[in-house]
Image 1 (cartoon, rainbow, N blue to C red):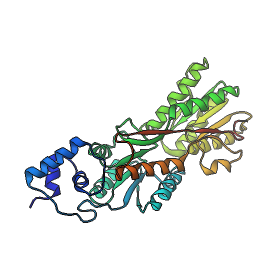
Image 2: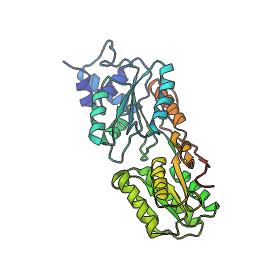
Image 3: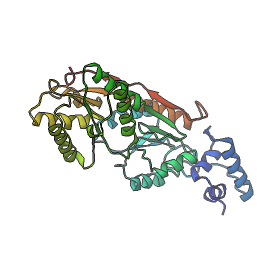
Length: 331
């Protein structure tokens, strides 16, 4: 019996792509892909008369939303932004916690791609996320959020380089001269982009880059705390620390306090993300604010438009603005 699975194999596409070609809904699919599927179906003699939900191509009204973690405070507002929009459109969210584990990511992609969801919103992209890249290549509706590796895909991001440049430039304008930077895992390119922004800002200020001022997260919170403490003990000239997310800024503040130093009198601290707890610290944390809710809502809007054949036919990367929130750790 000829079925969609055999057509997909013949055309070298996913079953979901075949189902979207034969669906009554106006999915955007490249004309070359559509022609390839129709040619394979014709050659195999596959001419469906109708479709049932999920298995045969009708809309499921489900969207998969991949996040690395829900303990990281940046992701709940992204989820809420997406959910608020999609609920009003009659769509459900299937939330998947990936834990930055490629095997978990692959499991959920394979589990959901064939008739369970209409599209994916991905906040958990990694440099080696091959299962997601396969979805993109097969023209499955995908929108990336926050993490982006220059794939030819719809995305909602910030300019990490520029946001970091502006943050460090702000510290320089307040008179800081020796600024350390706290980075996250090297496999996440957002931290590499923020490091490049830091480097460019100090270069333009005529300050030579000193690799000894970089603190990399290598062994969790305790290891990061130890690394910050040791650096501050070695180098008493450090007058500011730029932490590339607020969680790392909180660890930085604890290390500074435990050494008997004062914030901002001895050392200024600037974070990144503007999570809710940043206002409750003592002193309240200056930070770079990301528009997380708006990112989630825009990603949901984009995935809805893609599924329903609306909007641009080519992928669009939307870059949202950030803002430096000045509180008591820098003034």
